[in-house]
Structures are given as C-alpha cells and as structure tokens.
Image 1 (cartoon, helix red, strand yellow):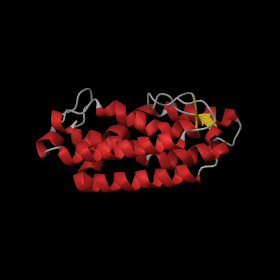
Image 2 (cartoon, helix red, strand yellow; image 1 turned 180 degrees about the vertical axis):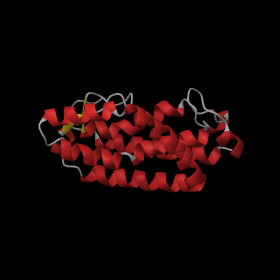
Image 3 (spheres, rainbow, N blue to C red; image 1 turned 120 degrees about the vertical axis):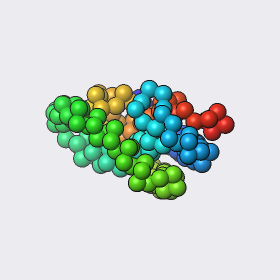
Image 4 (tube, rainbow, N blue to C red; image 1 turned 45 degrees about the vertical axis):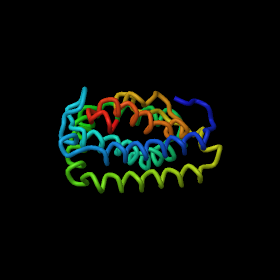
Length: 180
C-alpha cells in the first residue's frame, strides 16, 4: 500500500469513477440467473459478492473515523486495538459472510446501485475536504481481517483500499462474458 504521506487525489477520483461505472455495468448487465449463480472461490452468489464489493466502500466512513480517532493516540494503543480486532477474526468472518447474504436480499439490484452512487459521492467529497497533512495519519490495522490491510495504514492507504478489494473480488464473479 501507499506509504507516502500524500495521495494523488486525481488518481483516486478516477479510480472511484472507474469502479462506479464498472459496478453499474456489472449490476445492470447481469440477468437474474447471473445474479443467482455461484462465484469462483467464495460461498456467495454473484449478487451477494457484488454487495460485498459495495460494502468495502461503505466501510470507508467507519475506517476513516477509526484512524482519525486512534491514529492520534500513541502507536501502542493502536497495536492493542489491532490485536483485539485480530482476536475477533472468527466472529468477524461470520458477520462478513452473512452481511452480504442478507444485504443483497434487502437492497436488491436497484438499491445496490443507488447506494453505491451515494457512497462514491461521499468519498469524492471527503477526499476533496482532506488536508494534505491528514493523509499521513496512521494506525495499526487487524491484518487477519482482510488481505489488503497492512500492519500500519495511513489515511492515504485507506483511500486506495476499497478499490483493491473491489478489483480482487471482481475476478471472482461468474457473470456472462458480455457483463464482465
């Protein structure tokens, strides 16, 4: 992940728009049968995995709040928090699996697209409001929760996280070729 204290805002804005367009293309181009089809390497259906990909962006608000809070404490406080969160990996994994199962059912295709647009709009606004110095704020993260979390992450790292997560899971979708 990016370990520098600054962030290429334009590149992140472009990433956000790329994934927004990709998410809509995937969602809008999928048939009901496509959405119900199992994915590669997960226990989710395509629809559930799409919700999980959306959820990576929804998590940005609490992740940014977490780093703004604990990133100001001595690093040892963050390490204790990261270890506690890592200790709770099994319950997290259950919630991480069941969340998309229920979330996809509750939101459905149309509302997933609407929520994705709102979350991306929020991230664009938040990114524009960030002070340059805040990109260096850092704290330890629970590395067992997600392969894209690192021992220590900065605010700049967090802005790149959901797109890496999105791109990784996109390869697990089993939508028809025209939709990918």
